[in-house]
Image (cartoon, rainbow, N blue to C red; front, side, top):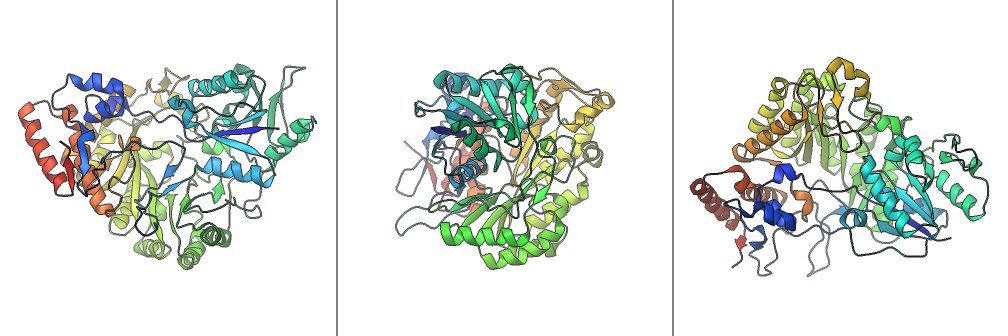
Length: 546
């Protein structure tokens, strides 16, 4: 029985509206060259080189393969005379599923799902009996249809099994719309997947497999088996084979919070988490057995519950392994917490502030106030811990006047990397749907990315305009804030041998240089700014190739 695992990230498409007319648009895709060719001041970013004798391009296309980059510019130990590789972790879903299959003794091959989105010439093996397709980072019907059609075209006689967030939520519709999908594993796969594969290999009955959904070929009815949850503290954590400098990690499933824009609790309703001791033991094991230098914790909120965090940080201080995680702003409540995080070797934290307005945060049921966001920002800004913060514009009920608090904070106060997203409403399990009448919410593209909507506060066009104007204002008025828009297409950090502070300065200069042709229409002013930016880059050892 030949098994093929297809897993990885969803389609990573640059936000073309934000990059329109920029030098990044011209660099990232051939059509970008044509679209930007008629605009003055487009600079050929491929000419930027490091002045270290290697002539290495500053902007190097990101290598494919489903590896998740670290939030901080972590550098790994390299043999003498060799360059250290950027800190990247295997994709958590792939890592976990491979561990499940290896523990069950199931021979398999892995095919990165990114190759489906990019149209890679690399083809999977041809002799396949069962295809396991992860939907963890698939978010709409069109994307799933593309993946299913790709599998069906290459393996028309194979059994296709889905699992992950999207199919957890949409199993009824998927089985109706895609007859080629035979089974869907809902929730925990540790027991369900090996049991299903044994039943298929032995041509047995799948009715005893937990967490399974399928369409009965005799009755055409959807059948579901019992739901079972694994005990994360008792279950052995994934055990990779060989050296793995950066390890992805999962310490909990589900979420104790009820933000109205998030469907995660619907996909994993029971919140469970590992103990502090188990986490510390896992970190030590990965360092001892796999040479791990960095752990990338990918839980929704690694810093809750507070009792676990208090017990965990002293243990991680002794473990001596760098790590990063997701947190809530109100977990960073005072300097003592930050001191404990630093002693525990925390290198970076990702936080969803979403808004700096209490009314909007109340609409979201975020259970965090703007002052907690500000406190977390100020505490982390003055620490050694790198932070990445995300914001939303256009949440139902938010008006341009309410968004003004967020805009003003980003333009005048924020420092570091951030993302500003336009609200999207493509999941009917999001709790905000229950308040559609309250906010006058209408969505006009439910089959796609749900980018076209309106509510009492604003419509999607207004939100997109506010996003564009805010990012432009931050770009030129705030020397210390860097928006993540174009960076995903390139290797990070830009200068592997430099400090995070130096990389931040160079990234800011490149951001301004790349967006110059989109932001500044006056040719003389654009030329003056370009000369200043190139001079600034030269001061950091970045030159223009001739």
